[in-house]
Length: 147
Image (cartoon, rainbow, N blue to C red; front, side):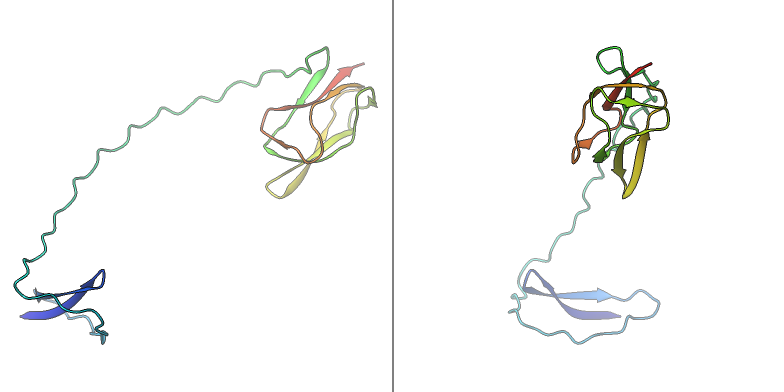
């Protein structure tokens, strides 16, 4: 059974005929007509399927790099950022004595605050970050000379 329809594309009306092959028909909804219709002597639209692009080449997964010890540039032990984040507060300054367990600074990542804790007794050699700074994973933040 052939049915005639008006189809609107970019504000232009087209008259089309559709043949129903089987199954149930979809319910019809009223359509407001606001664009003029084209003359019936217009050539029918031609639809072509675009060629499928080839799949993207698969990259070989990178192997994780081994952790390398970070130093402060001098004799100090470095404390790298364990994750990317925002420095909320720095609790130490160069020349300050620190003990194992002291909080060196606080970093916010993924809406969680994380304390960077000193794991050795010593003296702060250098502080490489400041409050409000964004750091990337692995950036050296503080260097402590062990005592």
